[in-house]
Length: 469
Image (cartoon, rainbow, N blue to C red):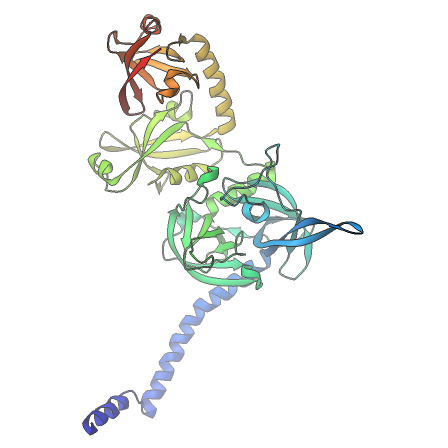
């Protein structure tokens, strides 16, 4: 026992410093603290530069109360989020935030709509500035597919933010989240970028675009709509959501990248809505085994399963079966990533599609079309095709002859073709008794059958289907 006590005392003595060692340790600590203070000063400056642009957005609802003396309308707090100034003139300022901050939710990652299809906002948006000035905001525009909204306040001269290029963000980069979390007031939190091009499925119900920057920076309820900032004081993203079993931060926060947010903010300010681009490709994801069989690295990849006619993809020479491995310099591993990359561009922009075709890498320049214009052109072309097509009443569809088969251009919802899962763009390749079908005469012969077995191609899948009228 005495020996053990002596050993413990000797071990404790090894931690004791004499005066000379203590002074050396203090000097080293001062040096290290001085170096770390440079990073602290960077965080100070981020707050000083960006903080005045960050605002609190308080949503309010009006409630009607029936009392003995009549009706009384009172205003109640509905929630609080954050936002930041993206533009300003002498009379007014424009503030970007999340759509879910200013629109009423349906409780299922979607938004409430009126009978006319418009979204339901809160009765009042009260914006509180960094210097405690307040003003009511009005809607400029909302884009639910990116979960972004732009509002305007009648206070001018506010400092607008600078934007960073989120495509240059790297895992491990320091970032700062600014906003108004949990009703405690303006706050800053620091962390790193944990991942890029991350999808969580939160916008799947509304067909949204997901290519999030993931961060371990503390993001909590109320931070939504606030900026994620790099150490140069530039906006890398818009804090939007978290993954948590408790409802508060556990280190999994997600921000909409600036490549998307900046374009949406500009479009909403200039046009009140976002102009979407399109290429005209149908996509499917393939797993690591399929990628390896194609000679690609063993990772998830995106393959072209079909191409719409008269679209930029067809005109540029994209083919069914091509694997899209990148857009410009950004790698693509999922359909969500591809959609988000295209969403970051405006109609009229040209992008470089990096393709894997026949065991070799190729690059094609493709001009992005305006989605609405493209859909109108396709609808007009489809009407012309339907007028020329041969009706198959026994199957409930209309077809056009092609060297590879009969192309379906119209499918009746109540017909046998629809029941069999067939859709426009599929091909009827053959009928067991008639053989290969490639001409208008073949289509007419098929139309006379009351029953038969047809070979149908849908994308890369070919099946035989039996029908009986």
